[in-house]
Amino acid sequence: MLEIVYDFLALAGLEAVPVNLAELVPYLLRFIVAVVLVLAVFKAIAAITQIFCNWRWFK
Image (cartoon, rainbow, N blue to C red; front, side):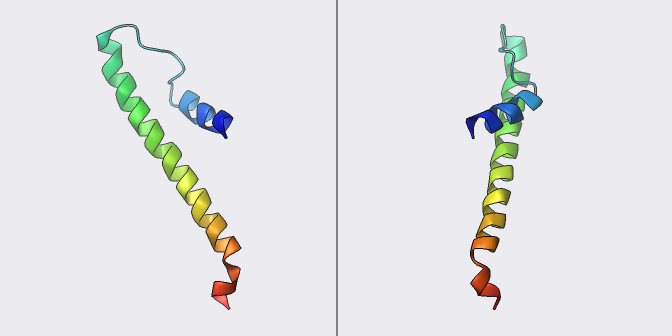
């Protein structure tokens, strides 16, 4: 799971660490957006899993 999270963050361009303050602000904004997207993906996966695991509810 850690590799998947790392891949999501790498897609957002977070593999390089900022070296000065001018690069830090956009980096932090990209980091926040990337974390929100990763959480949304895992929440969607959890919801789909719950639907399939709770299949008796549909009867």
